[in-house]
Image 1 (cartoon, rainbow, N blue to C red):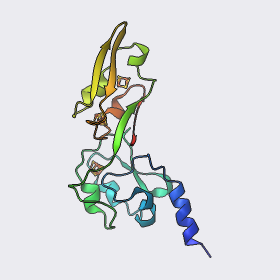
Image 2 (tube, protein in one colour; image 1 turned 60 degrees about the vertical axis):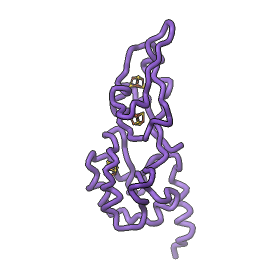
Image 3 (cartoon, protein in one colour; image 1 turned 90 degrees about the vertical axis):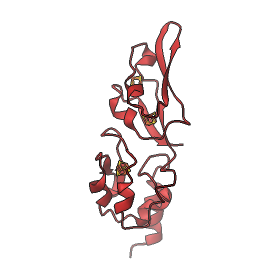
Image 4 (cartoon, rainbow, N blue to C red; image 1 turned 90 degrees about the horizontal axis):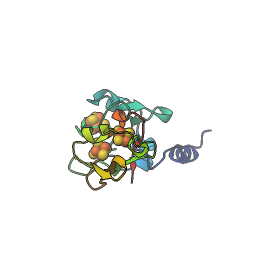
Length: 159
Ligand code: SF4
Ligand code: SF4
Ligand code: SF4
């Protein structure tokens, strides 16, 4: 007989809490206990960024596009997994790794051009091209900067 308690613990263990799964999730750590993998959120996403990840559970993929915070994924879900639209969607923020072209002194501002909230600011530095810096208070974790980065240097994860 399958021990459901053990199975749930295992399901939780494979969830990385810092990874961004879906906006407005009430409880990311118990998500896999309640999500039935029906795929309604996948079909509803206007930018098609929700894919079936580990175990067939839905997760966003910013290499495909950004989240527009349309709330459709939460709206169509038949399970009580999501919070109200008036709540903050997530604690996701972008970070830039040292593979960034600007850090290697190659001019690039692609991520900044995509950022609607203007969270990515480029600062001039002596002897270097302008360097990107993310103002975490202004980043909403939309992921728009991820797909445009030519060196895949941006990651969006929960704080
Ligand atoms: S809020 Fe909209 S754009 Fe963002 S993941 Fe949900 S359906 Fe997709
Ligand atoms: S995740 Fe969105 S808000 Fe944050 S830096 Fe990237 S484009 Fe700007
Ligand atoms: S788009 Fe990528 S390589 Fe270009 S400045 Fe931004 S993080 Fe650096």
